[in-house]
Image (tube, rainbow, N blue to C red; front, side, top):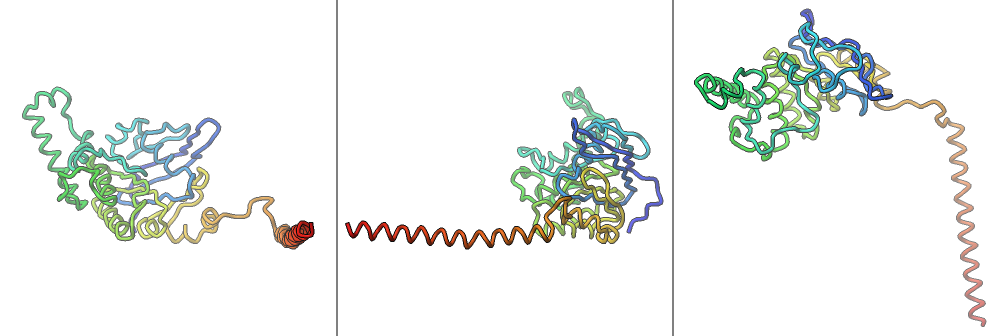
Length: 302
């Protein structure tokens, strides 16, 4: 279990996101400390990915603020990445016609100082920066177990390895905080276990991790703390044991009777009505059969 005595790398304060009259996220507070793994869970439509988008500058929060290492972040994704926050997406977003190595090199763009003219002239400074980026990219591919496929097109990788490549590309910006949006979606148990080990290894490097996931076993095995979003609001936050035993969390996932829901009396009435309908239907069918038999005898007599 990671201690949280140091200042947080991420501080989200009162984050609210509205789309017209719809409030997708409402007054959510969340801290993430260095070297900590924090989970964000909730039913579908709870506002988890919207909250991620607010943290990374894809959305400008209607209210509230997001700070990284004490500095409020501008709502621009490239500046958020430059500050030290990287993310993956729920749906894989690789450059399909680029190689595995080239995909990771794309993630280095915020950590290089070479500009357009340097790239065009390809001077000594550019060549040194390019060599350094390739070295770092290969280190990350080795770290994620993809070094032997550096020259393969990303579209030819198996699904689980494409997920790993997304993580390697995110790590290429040398973040202090990594946001993972459903990293095990669609994976088999072996791939899920490998992803869990990879996240632990990332944490051991000193990078904090905030992860959205629907696989509860994965989340509760992985995370130091878990926060639960329901209908855009933070319902509870605590250790895995605290969250798993909270009745509100259980109700949010399994559902609770809504106001005016049919009770025992109404259910009995429905059952009685259905039972009464069956004999009537049977009797009607018998009458129809008798009528058809009478008609047939009349025709034979004629």
